[in-house]
Length: 161
Image 1 (tube, rainbow, N blue to C red):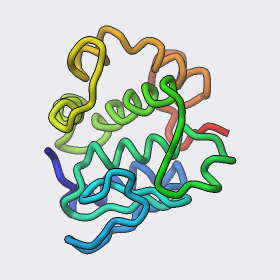
Image 2 (image 1 turned 180 degrees about the horizontal axis):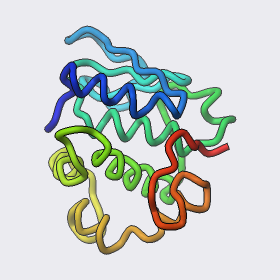
Image 3 (image 1 turned 180 degrees about the vertical axis):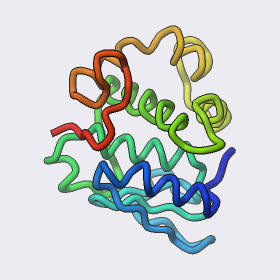
Image 4 (image 1 turned 90 degrees about the vertical axis):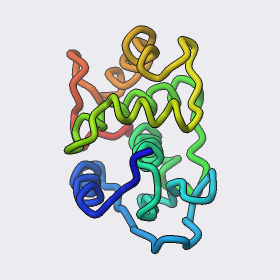
């Protein structure tokens, strides 16, 4: 799985800054505040995404996508559990895949492979098949909330109100 090295950290900061999400890098081996899954997985508290150098990139993107997809009331009280329903979870997965293409040397395919390796489960058996063949509802969810335009392109900096 792709971890977050120094160059990728800088690209991730640049990607998420328009969404008003701050990234705090925790020293390797330290407990990650706000981590739902523990160990090296990303954590969320308020508008801060906590990561370590060994945090998997897909984990950071997933938690960041939760932040973007939740409404302001949930963001205000956010501490560890992003919550959300199945439709939102699908939208979060779709968004993290799109963001993979925005990061140099990464790409959507890398994110989808890492998602499968981590254990995400999809009706069609893989993140790639789901994304390409069965994710219309997730894309529509993001479009309806203004996070994607009508062509399915990212609208950087847009968050659910």
